[in-house]
Image 1 (cartoon, rainbow, N blue to C red):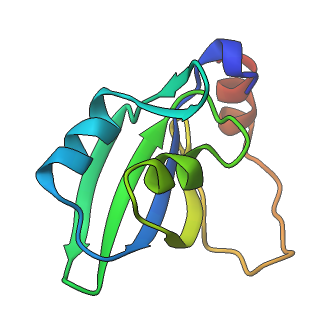
Image 2: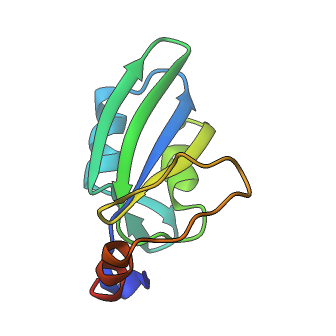
Image 3: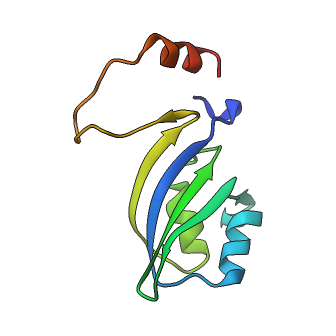
Length: 114
C-alpha cells in the first residue's frame, strides 16, 4: 500500500457547513495543502448535504499525513468525522474499534498484487 503504488483509499467524511460549487471543483482539481504541495480527490461523491454539514465519500491515492483534513481546511471547512471505508477493492468495516479478522486468501493475493 506504499504511496508509489497509488492504491485508492476511500473515506467517509463529514464537514461543517455547505460546500460551494467552487470549493467542490477545487477539491477535484487540486488544492495546495502546504507550499508547492498540490493534492486532489480522485473522486468526490456527495452523500448528504445540509446547511449545517456535508457528508462525502472521497477517494485519494497518495495518503499524505492528514491529507483529507488539510484539503477541506484549504477550502474553508473543518472535518468533523473521518473514517476509511475502502482500501483498493477491499471494503472495510463490520468490526468494532480494536477488533480484527483474518484476511481471506483472495484478499491477501489482491494485496500482494497491488
